[in-house]
Image 1: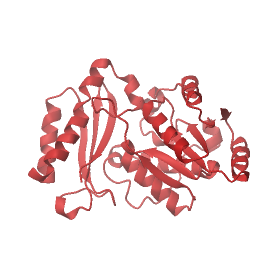
Image 2 (image 1 turned 180 degrees about the vertical axis):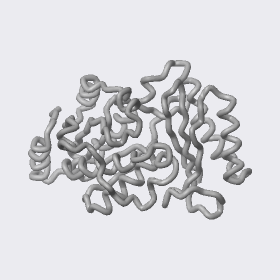
Image 3 (image 1 turned 60 degrees about the vertical axis):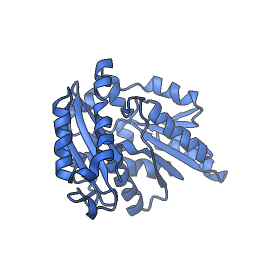
Length: 280
């Protein structure tokens, strides 16, 4: 497995793949890899001739400096995990390689996809995501790029960015990988105790309950019922919302929506967890 740290090395790798007429799959990560990341890489391997994974903790998508500081970094372990599943290459750039001397987000028109849910609670987050993903896709030039549906709002934004900048990479969403409890796999879970991991199952349980019962409630009443469930738990609910997959607009009437997805963010032992589930 090759490890690249510069754009020039990436260019040489891409030229080699392209000269062979082969396809290239790409998985963007911020490291601290888990089974969910490996599932993305393995799907890429099954659908492409070559697969490359990036590991880069992107500073411009953190609105909270403390969150950036505490984000787990396990580069050596991550490289070993990717090598074990025979990924072809890893891109491990520095902040300077990605941003130069000015570490800031571009201003990209996200057509309102960044409004609500994470956009409301993490100002500037999606501009940072859009900026770094655009740069990674331009540098790596993959045939296909794979992103988990756990960050569904982010996935919609990345598809938009690839389209408006004509990046010629197919963006593929991959189903969220979960523990038997239903808890979504996340790098942030490394910061949770065993007890907290167990208590955090309320996130998935509440989403599944909403899916099974949403027609019995109007959207606002269903939100209130979920808020009550969390009030009786150890987690601190940050938000629960329902949005349409097509335009990410919040839903106030089930019949007006083309599709329905529930979004939840909550704090567990001070660690911020997010998840979502398609309801209809």
